[in-house]
Length: 231
Image 1 (cartoon, rainbow, N blue to C red):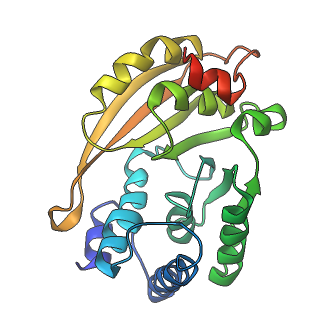
Image 2 (image 1 turned 90 degrees about the vertical axis):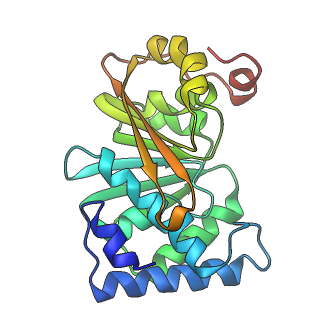
């Protein structure tokens, strides 16, 4: 795969410095993955396709510059770190409940030399207490079903901001079961963007939810309650 060429189709450009950062990211990911479970995908082209390129597809859903973005449950840093590498106008905050992943990400951010990203050890429902409606965009990739994600993520989104759920194919059933919760939390489905990964490595969907009214203060509930009885 010609990574630079494929990324250009997403409206992005990569200079040598950014390409070098992606290569360093790949090497760090593979090295740390030997003793920490970060990804089951380790072959170079697949990492570039299924992690790096897939993360950058989020750019198709971003409708402005100078964005404050929160990535909920970022794991190994997808989609937030690739976006922070390519777009230095995006101020990225990553939250994850597992501290060893946060330590990996902060070490990675330092090694990559990017100053527009930080990783914080926190659960989304706790983080919201001091960051309610603080972000232009909130995103989550491969974290949970949509009816659970919306309650974790929507309270963090500013009025008129976006929650973007990165999904595999056939998100229609997830959207249907989440419709009531999306409405309660102040959102509405704006559109779904269908995507193909390069080299026929699969399809993806970006579920874009616009926030049109404030989320009631009683949300989010604790995660155990959200999971047990989604809205």
